[in-house]
Length: 181
Ligand code: XMP
Ligand code: MG
Image 1 (cartoon, rainbow, N blue to C red):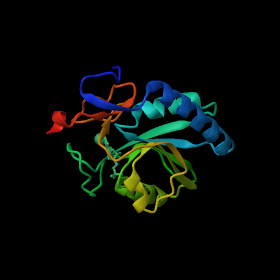
Image 2 (image 1 turned 135 degrees about the vertical axis):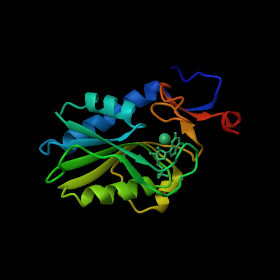
Image 3 (image 1 turned 30 degrees about the vertical axis):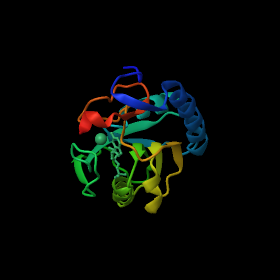
Image 4 (image 1 turned 180 degrees about the vertical axis):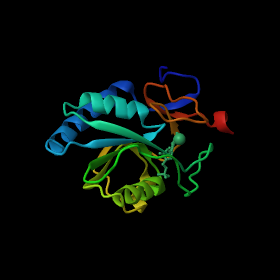
């Protein structure tokens, strides 16, 4: 679905900008993980397009697994309560884990997730996120790779949803407030 859509009031990142940035990130990851056999852990469902594009842009062979956690419910405000809805199938012992996230807002989800995965014996836990909002600076988490820093508006597209809609938009934009008010 094209980002040029009546429910999108502002375009933040176009499909072309995403593919250029994904290629840059993939090259950095190829170098960083050259001798580490990384396990990419995607956070469902928002990270699906990013994980698919990023892993295919990498030349390294990777293994991939998925986790589903809930932090937002169906609304637009972070609850701070993180629950595992679907856990990994992979044993993390000795693995170099790269968490692949769609967006970091308050950072609550990610700080919980990184410490959870670190307790499972991983050799390393790093994070790559496509998007980061300004509030993320308030939480002390080391995010090694960031695609784009964006304003704190609620955004949709490229995996990000509002009530499960708009995930298939090819870029990222701000949803018209009239849609959710
Ligand atoms: P926190 O606040 O814990 O939030 O860093 C991370 C998770 O919240 C969701 N999130 C969004 N989803 N548009 C969305 O569709 C947004 O603007 C947005 N901000 C945060 C997302 O699931 C992310 O993993
Ligand atoms: Mg979501």
